[in-house]
Amino acid sequence: MFKPKKKLGQCFLIDKNFVNKAVEAANLTKDDVVLEIGLGKGILTEELAKNAKKVYIIEIDKNLEPYANRLKEKYNNIEIIWGDAVKVDLSNLDFNKVVANLPYQISSPITFKLLKKGFDLAVLMYQYEFAKRMVAKEGTKDYGRLSVAVQSRADVEIIAKVPPNAFSPKPKVFSAIVKIKPNKNKYHIENEDFFDNFLRAIFQHRNKSVRRALIDSSKELNYSKNEMKKILEEFSKEHENLMNEKVFKLSVGEIVKLSNELYKFLKR
Ligand code: SAM
Image (spheres, protein in one colour):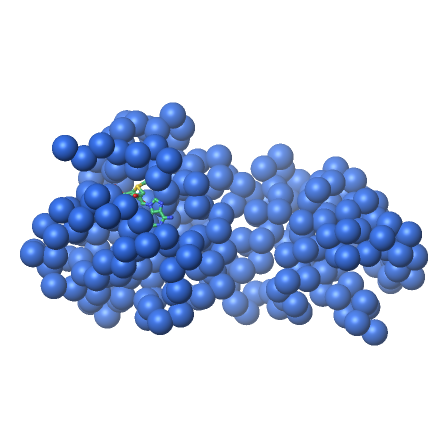
């Protein structure tokens, strides 16, 4: 008997309705190569194998091998990579879609790793609270660093709220199926590392003005408070309105713009 491990996020889907919802949202064709993170007992894998050309699955727990073998006997388009999805090198995996019921403890690193690698479409299951933060709009309580980091790179949409009894063992919280479509041409980010540091800096003080937040978190951009104060005296002249606005009220586009402008200003 397989004993699920909590620390690996092993809550397996048992409600087929949600498996079907995720697979339908991925709009699979026999040309698609899909990446799945976390095999579990293979309930999702089986539907992916039926509908796609090929399925790569990254799974950390070798105890699940009997489930993998059973599927491999039935389908010849499944390839399992045993390892930690956060560490596995994705550069040689040629997939165009991602469908997964993610182990929640790696939600954030895996999402950004995937966005960096690139794909056409992902349908991923997250904890509901995390999903709400991913899709939140400016001015709302859920809007933060995660919202901007994701939405500046992709269009995101919650397509279903999933109750605990859709899983076994039952998690304590609701989940959500999220559709993620990269939007490469919507925003231009001058420098990804600077942008990520800029987001970390300003969202440490989401209720303060951008100017104040940047001074108080100047370390995130490798400046002392005094240095940042001086820089912003000059920089803010051209961006007064945005710099005086509270961080959580700025839209994704406004934040990308400020980050790009500050990056260019500092390079001058
Ligand atoms: N896809 C299955 C389903 O829907 O029932 C399983 C989903 S379960 C929420 C998450 C799966 O991810 C588990 O099988 C777990 O062992 C695996 N897992 C946990 N951490 C992982 C990691 N770092 N890398 C790869 N797989 C991981």
